[in-house]
Image (cartoon, rainbow, N blue to C red; front, side, top):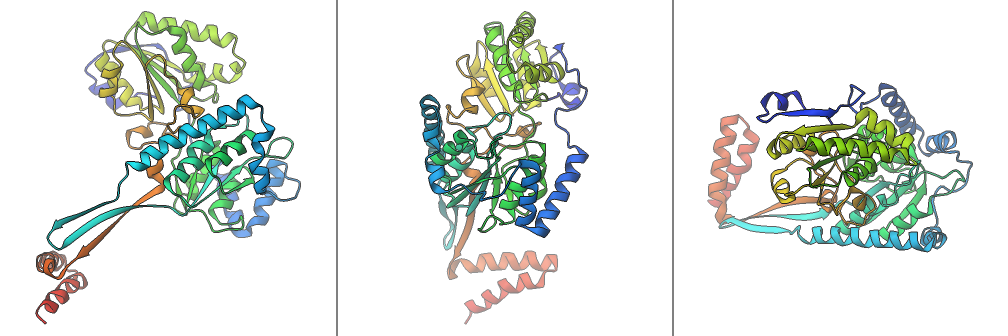
Length: 439
């Protein structure tokens, strides 16, 4: 997350930095080695099919043979192998995410209108047929990922949702991840990770038709595979390292702000965290709080480098400048902890999801408890795109129904435009209908 030179040239207000990144490069760059590796893998899998998939599973996932698909019983009983409190928390997150998605779906209405007498137009929301969800389970198993991908797809009405999740050191699936997928309505689950998992779903190598859409987060190889498979299938979005930004002022508790910045920094050593504040004293207090909290954080080897290399603290002279700076960053997650949160909420336009007030935190959404989706745009993508929701799984398909009486005006106008363009066949489709009116 970096301010663009164009904004800085036109910004009315002034600001200064209390902390700048040590690494003078974007947090996420496409690595040529990753691009080359993924391209070679996809070509190989497309040529050799499931044999190539299993070869990569052996070399990358320690696959030793046997069925890579979980049985319905293994999926259904996954929750029985979890501690009771974890199982209850997963159930709560699943319920809330599906409830919010169902409410969104209820507000996407089919529409039909008669623009002029005899010309009826409309649109119907039709779900895609098949979705493949990638459920990460590496260094940090993202338990709630199934809520946001499988569950939201099902809330949109997708008939078939399959999922792939990488094997654990013992060779099996992560039970918490599988239970979350089960509660979300998954149809099939495969213990398969990385590029080979996405390719297998996209190319229809798992005993069924190819999926129409791939969704879910992953490492750089997974993200690059989605990029290269886009076009063969639809995707949710291209996401880089997790991001958090906070706008806070002197009324905010520096310890809370620091904790929330570190809460996302621990996603990875290149996860940027940014604070924009209107109080230099508050900004300095947050920097000090971050350093204190890092000292006792078990994930300091991850969050520490992320904060050191990519963390920023910027002091704006006024709230208008603070808002303009934040809209330019367009962060994935944005927290507002100020004396006037509503003003910022009304003013801000570019963010993946916004968290308002001191009692809100990104982690509530990350774990599915807030109901909203955490598959969100990064690297400034919030300037033009929204996060995953039921609408992404729906195709608003239009239709037209035209009567004889409405034909003259339509056909004459189409004839005139087509003739002016030199498109004779287009013109004929209209003139033939005009001629039929005289029969």
